Image 1: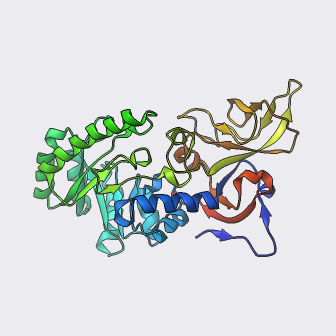
Image 2: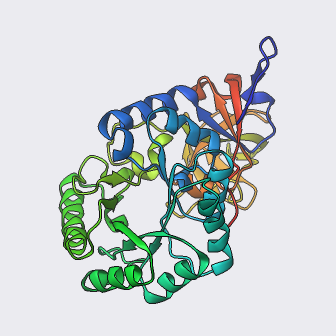
Image 3: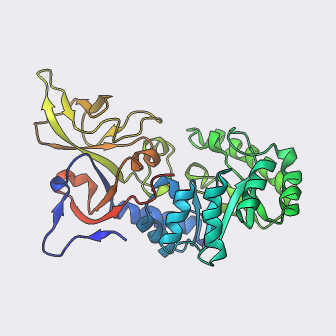
Length: 351
């Protein structure tokens, strides 16, 4: 678990070396409660790829969610090692038999229940050869990414059963609709994708229909379990959708230089922030001018060398994976004066 700060010796965010990843404890608690109210217990399968942190997963288990979604075999291994292996879904195709066999060893030893996504004869063969026992048929519902053609779902399920695998059901991810800003357009697109998944489920059978994410949490009524993760701390891309979750994550940087023209330079850049969903937002006044490898240049504020400045990432998943620790603070808006409540390892990084 994480490291709690000693009573009587408070650590401030301003005491941390930068760049530092800060998460607001109150926002986390609120977001978790909001999702648990809307998607209680098994209706949510939190996706640990969003935060890659077993202490945070433990918080979600405490909120009633005992099944989790993973993107890598490393995430699965780490969750089992942390005692969070009640029901793990590897929601990606894997053909590396050595890695799959390591997961099968957990199953054989009774340490975890692990289900693997399959979408082809090759992925079925790899899962069976490795000793995996349960699978979901992954269906392409329009993204496109992994997943079989919907018309092939039934035959893939038959092949899996012939190989001795138990087919728990289907999964499909409508990721192409996840960040659609217009609610009506997003809802209609999710509906089209889920109609495809329902048709595939009719062919496949099983009790599980898995899919969705933070962006469709309130408009996907098809899945039996929602694969959401980013909602725990949110990010700039999802914040544009008007969902009932708050942004609670910043990368804290230190002003290391102030230019004659009024711009300031922070010691946190591309190596501390993911930019696939656009540039970060600036906590407080001013705006981000551009990001470089180790620096971010900001304008429109009044900064001096040594000031702490928070950058809100546009995409939290790959941003978190760049850091070794998440520092939980009492009030992220307090900047360097925020008190560090606990420090959690980002212990599910790697492959």
